[in-house]
Image (cartoon, rainbow, N blue to C red; front, side, top):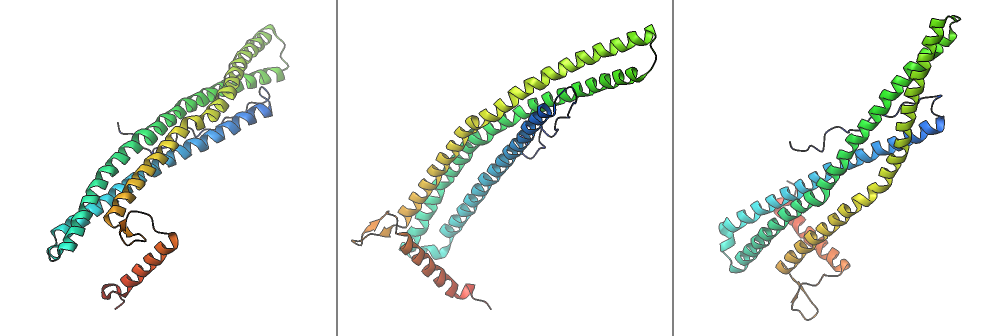
Length: 266
């Protein structure tokens, strides 16, 4: 089955308080931890969703670029000038190389970012099951606790009533013991999970940065070699132009484009 990053979160249930068995501080501590975990799972879902959108967008842009260069190479106008034909052919060569890089980048993002976060998110199913187990214990303890209260309120002091009350007290005690055990366990394990989550996610974030650095670096290098700038001596160079000069060049080109008849308002 294909994993769907848009599926609902596993963890949605906040823990129910259980006074007087558990103090307000104990209930509050667990509630805060669960709320943080709900936020973390939702963030993980959003990260995987946005990563999928990002890789799809890059792939779509690459496909558009490929179609553009193919159309240019098959256009008759490209063959009227040897210089223009060479530029078009070089452009097509660059986009072909970048297309392979896009595929590699998408695969790496899947393996180093999406899949590890998917595994982390699967852990929330186990956490949700543990919270649900606690809720069942809360219901069982409250039932016994209320039964004991009702029996205590009765003025009946027969042997049968006293025996029944004693049985309910034992049930309440057993249910309370189970609940406190699970509650205490959650108070230890959930904060530990929260603390360790960053150690788990950091390698994926680092890998993403390196993947993008490599992708955009190689892409920039290919296009820079395709259209080299002139250095001080007037010979071609792949060196980066100063930011101010670059902005002036971009502004000049945009103004030239705006001046074209095909973009003027009719």
